[in-house]
Image 1 (cartoon, rainbow, N blue to C red):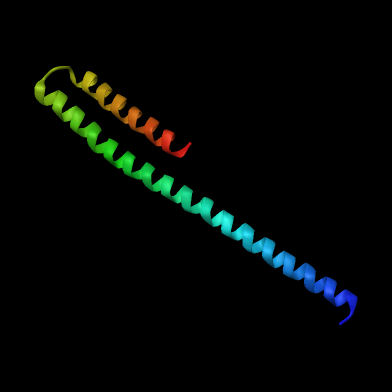
Image 2 (image 1 turned 120 degrees about the vertical axis):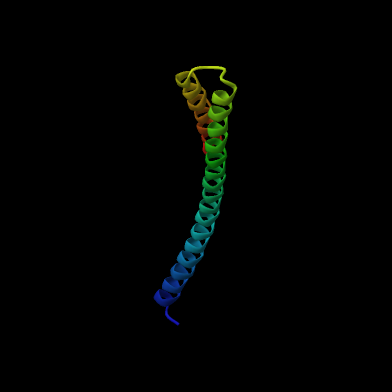
Amino acid sequence: MKIGTCRTASLAAGLFVALNLLAGSSGAVATEQAQQRREGRDVKQDTRQESRETKVDCRAANQKSNPACRQDKRDTKQDGRQKVRDIKY
């Protein structure tokens, strides 16, 4: 074998190893991000239901006016958004 051929083969092997390492690490990051998105969606769905229940309970108990109950619903949803931010970032 010629020296140039060995050098080319060595470079090709090194490049192959480097690409496999990069591909493996990016896969782990993608999996983690997917898990975070999934958790975020779950929290968001739970928050939607919780905020609906908050408003319905508020109106049923006739504790406050409708605008005040809407504000409670908004506050509940904002708390849920913060939980999602805590998960993702």
